[in-house]
Length: 112
Image 1 (cartoon, helix red, strand yellow):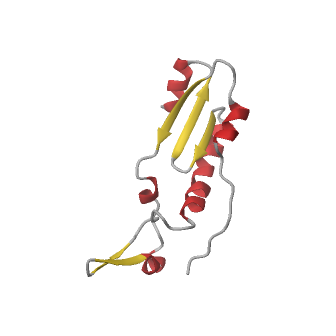
Image 2: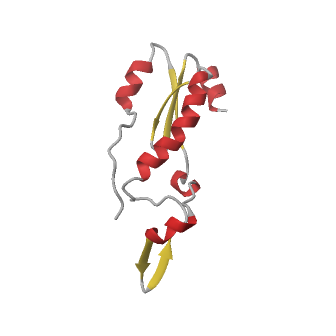
């Protein structure tokens, strides 16, 4: 079995502390985010399922897997920490990123 470990994620409540009057915001969605996270080949056998008589095996982080949100958030936190040190104000929630800045121009620059 796969053990689930409780963890805390950022949420819209977190944005309340970053939000300033007059801010512009943009939300990014990382497409197929879990599918970009490879699973160690020796662990892939634990991610098998059968459908219509055929056996399938995930080679990447599987949607619906209990620890998947924690694993993905842990990976993304490294990137988010780097961007925050560069001065970007952002919130992550799984594969969604909310970027905040004082003007439309600066917000669009941060997206790039």
